[in-house]
Image (cartoon, rainbow, N blue to C red; front, side, top):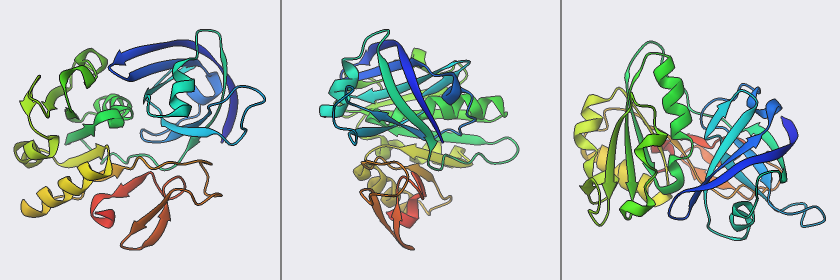
Length: 254
């Protein structure tokens, strides 16, 4: 694990309520993370609450810098949204267990709900580099809450689903899985728990032809299993999202 006092390079809104922050963080950029791992961000100024940290998935990593994609949902993310170019922010990571890509080439289906899109760009880039075909399904309530297609690699087939039908397919993303699941050899997902529950039900109804890997969005106050604030109840007992996850087998949890 690496602790780094990173410098904000940019922090811009990318969709309604969502932001992408780039940090000058050479050590974390070179740490060799896997897609789905996360960093902890101390969301307070010097002299503030030392325990007030929040977990954010790697969104992108390039030479010398990393990006985090997040949605403003409370005090910590509101603080982060207020950081400007040149501000210093304390980070540590990479933490947790990320996604596992299959050997050889395959057809990968990436499903994201809301801010669950954050780690999927990273996953898509690595998967494409390893020779996989990638289709991404992105779900949101309305078009203004969608990450623009320009954020995805051009080789990715990008399927949009909005609950109000303002862009792409209408409904919930789990209502449109069938044809894409039939095409895919592996499914990955990140989003809220209700999305996972609906996905599990849909896949069971469809004959459960594969076992998806999911990335859970639990609150993780410490990031390394000390506080037990991110317990996940699985079919194999209680697990900690930060230490045993955030990657889980969908059917172990839902």
